[in-house]
Structures are given as C-alpha cells and as structure tokens.
Image 1 (cartoon, rainbow, N blue to C red):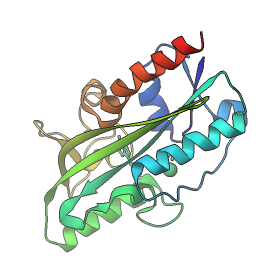
Image 2 (image 1 turned 90 degrees about the horizontal axis):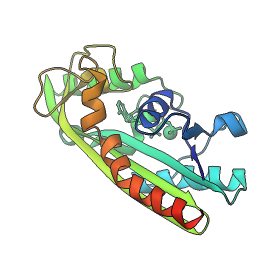
Image 3 (image 1 turned 60 degrees about the horizontal axis):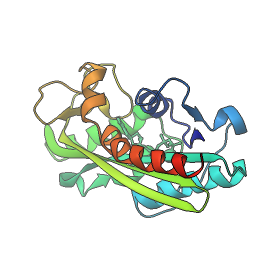
Length: 200
Ligand SMILES: O=c1nc[nH]c2c1ncn2[C@H]1C[C@H](O)[C@@H](COP(=O)(O)OP(=O)(O)OP(=O)(O)O)O1
Ligand SMILES: [Mg+2]
C-alpha cells in the first residue's frame, strides 16, 4: 500500500521522507494538486485526523495509507503559546519568519532571553476502516535571538535539551534522532506495517 502524506509543508515532507525508504512516501499534492485544509480542531490530534481524513476521502482509494502531521511549539511562560496555533501565530497566512518574530517579541516583552519550550507532533494514520494517532515531543528552550539556517519554522530559536546550539545550527542528523516528529513516526511505523500486512 502506498503511503500518502497529507501535508503541504516542505520541511515536514523532507523530514518524513528521510525516515522512510526512497519514494515510499508521496506528498498528496503530487496526486491531487494543492489544497487548503481547514484545521479547526482543538488539539494536535484532532487537527492531524482532520488532515489525514480529508486526504483519504479525496483520494477515494481503498489501497492507500494516509499519514499527516500536526505540530507546534509550546512556551509555558508565554501562556502556553503558540501551541496548536503555531502556523498562524502572527495571523492567517503568516510566514515561518513572521511567526518566529512574534514569539521573539513575546519573549522580549516579558524580559526573557530564553524560556523552557517544547515541540509536539501528532501523526495521524488513516486507512480503510482504521484510524490511529500517535505523539512525540522534543523538550528544550526558546531563545530571543535566531541562529542558523537549518530545519524550518521555529528551529532557529529552539535549543534542544543537552545542547547549546539551535536546531538551525545543529547537524540535521541530530534533529532526525531527537525530534518530536521522529519520535512519533517511530510509533507510527509498526502501525503502518500492520496495516500493510492486513492488505497484502
Ligand atoms: O520541527 C519543527 N521545527 C520548526 N517548527 C516546527 C516544527 N514542527 C512544527 N513546527 C511549527 C511550524 C508551523 O508554524 C507549525 C506547524 O503547523 P501545522 O499546521 O502542523 O503545519 P503546516 O501548516 O506548516 O503544514 P500542514 O498543516 O500542511 O501539515 O509548527
Ligand atoms: Mg497547517
């Protein structure tokens, strides 16, 4: 069964594909073209399911496994912001840069040079008569000065626990090892294998 990825985020596509065999995971846009999906759930898990179900239904195929990723960064000292609103923190249609700047402003407003923070990823898996959601987290701190070009989103201001550099500066292999997304996908893999063996 082909694995279709229900995301429009190129950074996620790159990271998720790097954890699978070559060409095993296909972004939905290659099959359906670009599409906006309204993420109106109140948790990462709900939004992940909304995205995976939408693409599964549009595909209308009984030989597909759809996986999605809903993720974000949470800063407890900034009222738990931006959390599930990470992609629209600076407003609808905001860029990664706009959102990162808004979080930097919120830290500075409070006189904080850094604050504990964590990323969450919910991965939903939707297949015929089957729905699953798994989670992963990466803890560390958010800092008030972006550093490095690696990763995407908030990575230039995120320093993972046990390191002094941001994900923007660290080797991508470290994010691959430690990230919220990698941890959730590690749990998703046996589910995907089980679904594949049932449909073989
Ligand atoms: O590893 C990460 N490194 C840096 N930033 C990250 C990461 N993981 C999530 N984030 C941020 C980016 C975006 O501001 C939000 C995800 O929002 P989210 O709605 O799940 O994704 P999205 O709209 O970019 O693509 P899509 O919904 O098509 O999957 O959290
Ligand atoms: Mg989104």
